[in-house]
Length: 382
Image 1: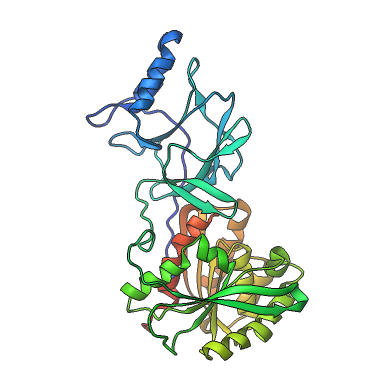
Image 2: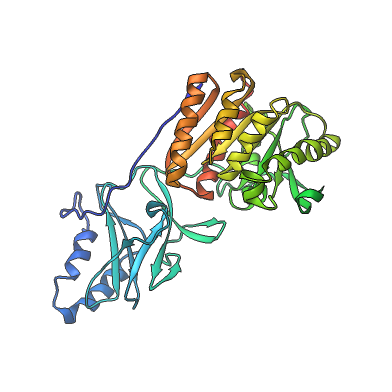
């Protein structure tokens, strides 16, 4: 059993008044714009912004950081992982200028947070921040705070491409067909490779860089036996992953999809299954409903129902290996279920690895989770 808890909390906006090291005190300069005569403020704001390269900017020698926005709007808020995506954090406007700002003190160490500005009701990415993270609803701006490091496969040059085979499977009782992708790690196939079923699999490919992760680990981590990944899209996602079609979807996976994959790629023993949010729930459901077919799970920010909690609790602990995580800025109602589930794993003695990180319910977080999940689930060592 391995457990890692790394929780950090966002602290509200507090201005620090003194520069800690040499150099311009940008926070002080920003605050002083509002103390100038009204006729001078816009010129001072323009001069300040001309010296400001991009968002965010940090106070020298401390953990404070600031976001600025300029525009003619009457109302500007910040929405993102730090607000539960409610536009409740109002930026401060400097009267007499088109400048708005928000300053954090004691910014959370190691956090990676998605956000947007909400300007008179219109949602916008931050034009002054070059960092963009794609979500299922389009691009968001990204804050990478003190101590955060992206996983090694992000923007890694010269990765060897994985082989991607298109997969079309009949699913008449679930809506007709499913078109997915089978991802083969680069290089010769190894018959000992296990198979990993990836829910929301196309999003894991396009939004979470799964192919790059598999390629990087294949090139640089000989201590892992990387899986063949069956990347499958849902049809009626909520019903199949979490409610009325869960059992039928599971039966289709085991009776139709798995035999087809094993016919073309070989029988490789019990499978793993991975998913995020409701995808984490269906992963747990498959593991406890078909324990003879699945032996490992990666459940990222999972929505853990009582059925899945009790189903896994009834298994022999030696039969299942689990990676579980959630973010300290995750959907609030999910966190108690995750905590209770992990306590059960601990009490029962399951082989599990748990992470709580200062991120939100996002594909950026689940992309970052691939490295620890793959390392834990597919380590060759006994």
